[in-house]
Length: 117
Image 1: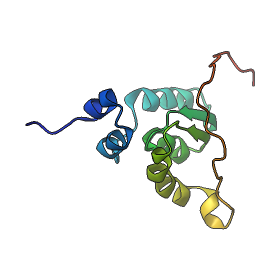
Image 2 (image 1 turned 30 degrees about the vertical axis):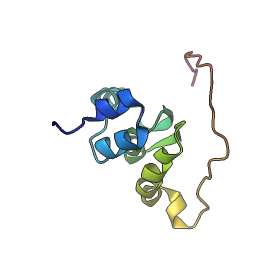
Image 3 (image 1 turned 180 degrees about the vertical axis):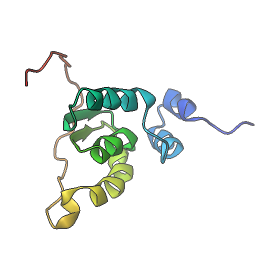
Image 4 (image 1 turned 45 degrees about the vertical axis):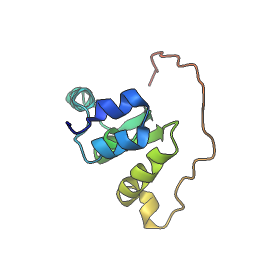
């Protein structure tokens, strides 16, 4: 029997299995390309919202490149993979209190609109 792939866990709705399967992988190529394009346009840093952040590979890349990130995921186990890897990279690890998630959004409407600077 072949070992399960990340997609197999996803299709089964086994999110902890998915998080373990992708833990430590590189950020998504689409994110890296978008960040490179922002850098090419002299726009480095900003505020990003990582919806369905999972284990945090894209969140970590954004933080590494100087972005502020709001990461959210509907599965509470996601943060057990994300926090240990995020906190050492943020000012929170230098004495500030870490953000504690207090709200889980079950349903939302996403409106994508351009933001003026």
